[in-house]
Length: 136
Ligand SMILES: [Zn+2]
Image 1 (cartoon, rainbow, N blue to C red):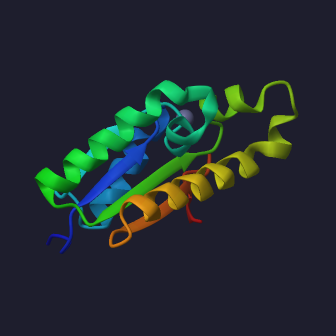
Image 2: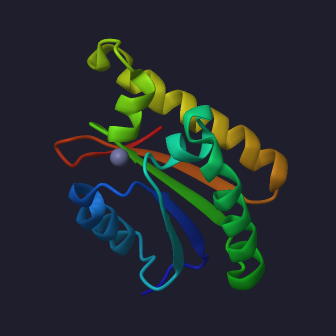
């Protein structure tokens, strides 16, 4: 069985989370129905000024996938213990700021996405280290 819509999935390059993301999308019946865009930090990589050079590439690819594959939804998957979040955090206590960094990246990506594509949907997910999926 397949999902009725196609999606683009934005996720992080971290090897530990590839099977979790893959299994989650299979469960959602999205096998063969999504484009994959994988970049360090996922939403952090495409919104934080630390990684400014990457932003345009993401939005251009999203644009292309919307045109070519008629996608209707962007699924954004961040994860805990992310190296990109640590780079952004700098010398502050990571445990204290980690969730805030993810939430801010979700807020930013939603704002830009809704402005560019008001008719399309966006979903933001954080995977914890114990492999649990949290919709945010
Ligand atoms: Zn990561």
